[in-house]
Image 1 (spheres, rainbow, N blue to C red):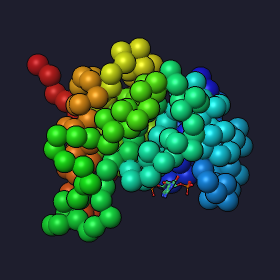
Image 2 (tube, rainbow, N blue to C red):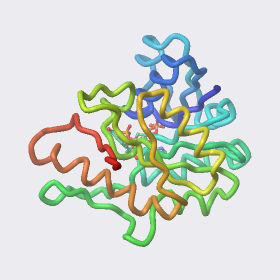
Image 3 (cartoon, rainbow, N blue to C red):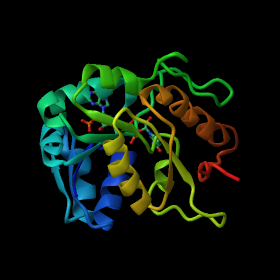
Length: 213
Ligand SMILES: NC(=O)c1ccc[n+]([C@@H]2O[C@H](COP(=O)([O-])OP(=O)(O)OC[C@H]3O[C@@H](n4cnc5c(N)ncnc54)[C@H](OP(=O)(O)O)[C@@H]3O)[C@@H](O)[C@H]2O)c1
């Protein structure tokens, strides 16, 4: 598939490299392509452009930018370039204040999520939450003795969730569909839970798995 990755940080770079490794065509978008110069050198099959370039290029998009900038980045990308496309939303609404005893602060409340805000502003986009509650170092081909970890996803469009589940599965995960966009109210805070062992004990290599009988 053609995948447009919006972002230049760790998540964007790791997922862009992962999708290239698994045989997809990738364009990464940023305001400042210099930030991706090293990535481009070691990922010669990938391309770098603006947010709008990456959005136009992708049949599927990945949103991997600072949570507070996510809406602005989608505006840069342009509503027309987003329309009808599955967008894997890896963002978290992390506030610009320090964690308290290892617990991150969010700029959203319990009865709303960042993904719902984005979905409301861009109704033609088909947002699917994913990759928000694991560290970038474990996003691609995670290896655990106990088996494949679980990626919790949600979104309003079943077709988009099927497409995204297929891609996430290629990267080594089981997916668990947690329902509609409102379920992002529960999935986004998993990022808080995931980070606590990191902030308290410098443990950053775990992932969540859903056990079923
Ligand atoms: N780091 C992790 O392990 C991890 C794991 C799971 C989820 N997440 C989530 O994934 C997202 C990306 O995380 P990250 O650590 O890779 O990167 P990040 O430092 O949170 O974000 C960097 C990206 O945000 C964009 N950005 C920042 N301020 C902006 C503004 N004012 N206007 C437009 N764009 C702006 C940057 O754009 P430019 O490229 O133009 O500079 C860059 O692409 C975040 O929402 C984070 O919560 C992170």
